[in-house]
Length: 80
Image (cartoon, rainbow, N blue to C red; front, side, top):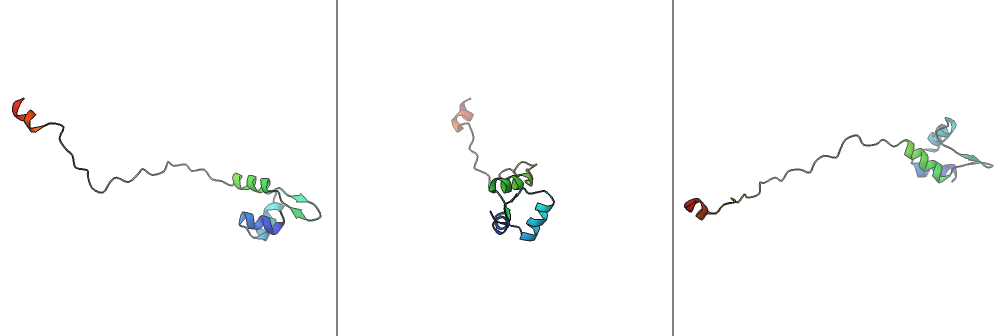
């Protein structure tokens, strides 16, 4: 990729991409100009990834309680 294409792929400005390349954060190929491999750009993105440290929040409780029906029958109360 060219410098402009790589910057667009990473959603960076070309100046920021040049600075990161100069600092050694992004691999590149010098071939009469500067070229970038998509695999190298993906490696750069993966290295900057921050993993989630918390579990997702639990599902919200229902707003209304479900109607509870007793496990016994009226006849059981009268004759037991």
